[in-house]
Image (spheres, rainbow, N blue to C red):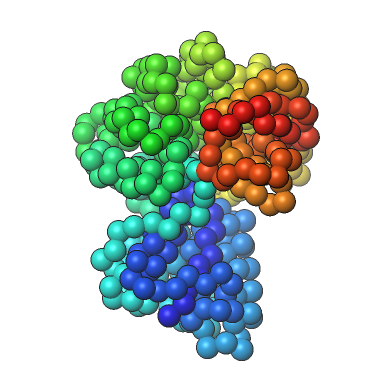
Length: 420
């Protein structure tokens, strides 16, 4: 039996895909590099917003066509099935079987009974690994479909996560990246209060782990204990991904963000006192009812330079969300504001990167596609700019001291100073 898996969407999906492949591999199933060599193709889908649905549909259609002359089963799994299952089944009758998020065990049994009892991962990354600390979301932001797809926020026990992190370290992970829909909310459902700071402290005791990074920390859930842990724990990256989506108080209330501009500024100002801290955020362009004045307020706020990395997304009107019933900003205006935010994003990144030329940074080399690529403490892999190294003899998953020599777009070019 040979299986090929296609993972769409976010790192949270990637973790699920790695666990599926690990369970299958541990039960004797071969993992095929290309679909044509497989008996089963699994597509792990994303259904968060309309572009994700289109990508899912395109991937399914492409795979059906590629496999038409092969006796290959096509299994489709995940978020898009939970959200659009009825429509997708009608659109693609050639798919062998469909599985909702909660039916992953059924998927495994359909391929190998033994795999359903295996608890391991096949890492697709080098040097770093994602640790999903919770499922679902209870923030209920007005524009978001995640609670309807994945249900309420559900933390995993501290001991279970600590054990999983130890296993990841044995697989070569020197950096563990904590992910969930809201990592700062971790533990509130099972311990009565946020325990994100305690989780990071426990993980820092694992000798093989050098870096612990926090992504997707909703600002309303950020606690003083968490800020202190980032400040004082040497193994916690001086980095925080805190999606704010907007800075205007009226829109923050309307979108049910549960936080004010003042609180966002307090968190950012506190963290900016930390030497070499790097902050990332995401912004939605063209939220419903956003006025030109409110957009200019957002641009002015971002121009103050609180954030080193900025992700920008155009607003998508998602059926079933409260925001979909609000007065919409015209598509042309959304596009225009999106482009202005992109220009601001590029300008801010260029300014940051110019200031890094000549500096030496400890870098985790994680990839090789003709040139070696890595990331530093101030940049998360896959989402921020990378370090590009032209040397021809480096080990993936290892740390190097690198001197920045030039910039190109969001990326930095560097040369080796010495090996750790």
